[in-house]
Length: 159
Length: 170
Image (cartoon, rainbow over all chains, first blue to last red):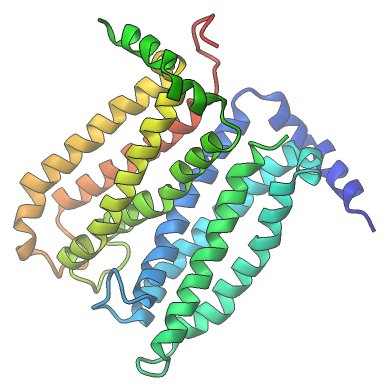
């Protein structure tokens, strides 16, 4: 089944239409999307750096992960909400856009990985996780999110 | 020679033309500039949030500052290099762009904020290093920092839009 009709429907919603017709809305929503990016970046990085043995390494991973969690979740919610708005204004372009498809393909595993494997690993007691697994988890996390970010930027470059 | 003359000269240099017209390099530089937001601003935001007393409350402020600063600084260097290249690719239009000017102004204010924070607030950190909520001066500096950087990001994003560009610069 093709998803094209769904994308067409999104593009034709009143919200999509309003954002398209406005001079300011798209750039303003884009800016919110970017601000949330910085927040997510910080919340993800302090935990991943710690898992790599860098950054705030005197703090327990568990505590850092707990402190970062609300900012990560908050940032993601803003990101998804602003992302959906941007999407509805150019859904059909996105349908044919390789960068958009790449972004979505990596977004799902990035979110799943963050809230399953990485979350459980960061919550584990000290000494119960081998450093190699911690480092591997951090590298996978940073890599997945980097592809999401880079592909996101690339949506604007390709047709 | 005025700044505008300098930008006009810069725009004629072969490397500027090459960068402007490149199919891949310009988008790559721009992506680096955007993704570095996570490293530079992400770590700076975490420090600001600690100074506001809303996260990492069990970690000493001096530790958050000292351990994150190398990452913030590395991010800043990448930001400046990629940002300078983006300017170099499109000098005249960028120089005349109102949002670019706002961004430069806000960057100077953010720098001033850091300077004041270092001299007037952070110097006495030993007294409140373990406070879950740091004193007012630190919170004000952190709040200003967050507001200024948010303004810088928004202004930066808006440079790409040319609503207010003077005619004939494209």
